[in-house]
Image (cartoon, rainbow, N blue to C red; front, side, top):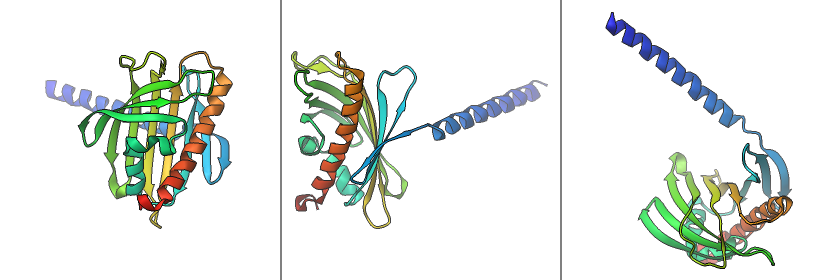
Length: 212
């Protein structure tokens, strides 16, 4: 009798897990992204998340280079200022493994706003069929410079997928709260400019002979 009771509980638990899992997958698949801008082969969409002040952005474009080359550029902190819009400096604070590290980055904001610093916990996942996922999430640390504002809420996700003709389809999802008292519309507008210019710079950098 006890055995049958345990089996019944197990079945009910599995059924509940299946329902909850299916609901989560369905909710993720039905995320509503709204068109924002399409320019120079770069598509940008946005969505508003409950409880978050600013818009979250999703950008997508094709880079005329293999996934490995694009990954090498993104993961090399010494190249940050050459492609990430307004990046002043970037360095690896520590590297726990080949797939995990902490990055410190400084981003210049338009005058008269103070520049921002951020610590990004970075994880890399090598997927099947040659895709690579880079996930970055802000971490709060003791400020490195007193004249900067630290970004305490930021998340970035790059998905690099190889195309049939050897190029890279990059999907860049990003949300950040810069802190301070900047108007909402300025931050949302700057988010679009940031992605547009950064991806444009990434395309150009990937096309240079030194990165081939």
